[in-house]
Image (tube, rainbow, N blue to C red; front, side):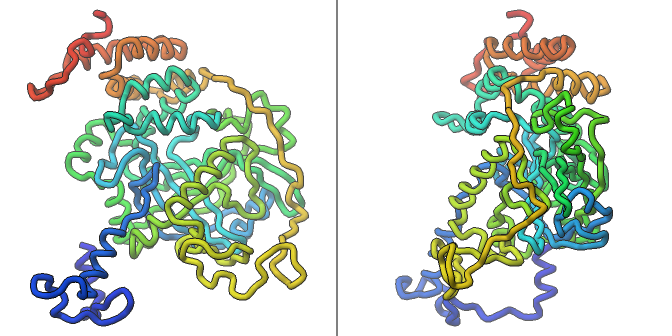
Length: 504
């Protein structure tokens, strides 16, 4: 339908030119009768085609994207001096990218055990604010080294080039801290009914400060106005066989029909004075803040009202980084934030070059730096301005913010695994038998082809969480193995792996 819309708004064709502006002659559009090595149209076209791709994102490669705005609905100046939150009714332009991890373009949006991401760039007068979120309120780990191991675990095996469930289950039992997150992912909370029904969480506990220098810590939440709604396993399977791009198509069509997707931006707030009295670590991204320990404060609405005009120029060249914060919002003190900042910056330079912030979709409203040269685009490259700091020639000077905390809040992080969070999720958050069974079925399907020794280790871990979880897993795994029916063309089938667990 998009092509018909384009034809309606384009009364007549434009003149075809080469990329350097010269008109293309009609005889040069036929390659069968002529000298291709002097055919500018052919050379220009083939060169563009074979050099069109840039390095893909290692995570969240497949995504939808749209423009929109953020509007403040509640006064939060008590907590932060950030100007984009400065007054009720204030609007800020935004760009959002909603993606799915470990899934490439052409693969299904309804993959059951993949994380979904929601990254938003706020174009504020104080610079760009990037909020990078996932669809689960807890992260996988705190230890920076697990970033590398987890990434390799869920990537393809270096020899077979296919994902190895043995590696996934082994990584879980070796690092039980990630279990809490995976219980959320493997449950119905892992796969929403499209992006419009998805909630998102920037994970970290950000340090806020107001005009008086008072400090607070906050966890932001992005909640769908439609309310979270999951896809059932049957729905996900049916949609996958019909439309691999369901999530993207649903978001795009809703915007085109002016049924604009909307989310509420909220924050859970802790007073800095209360931090030392807490009996939990408020900076542990693998855990939820207990109910009753914080104040929930609504901030405003996030509304997506315009689809991208060119996906590559906007969505593919968009660069987000957690370090992109504004006055009034300070970085959290935990190590994971530092790791993500480095990883995102390095990845963007690899994909887009050193000047990725000069690409139009990433350009802030105002920027004055001493950075020069490098990969295009360089724009005016600083013109004739002085290119070193400090200097005596009226070059840009730093901003002094008297309200900003001068000392970095320091914490001591410990390698402690809290299985009670997993236990609480299984026994309290999953309130029904059907919810528990869905979680177990996803784990059983993921580990169906895994060696028995690893299945046994997973069962031991489950039993430490809850005996019912372990028992359900054993029964479900047995049932799946008994019911496996593969066609005769599967020649490398290992019958031993399909024996019921209880009979081994």
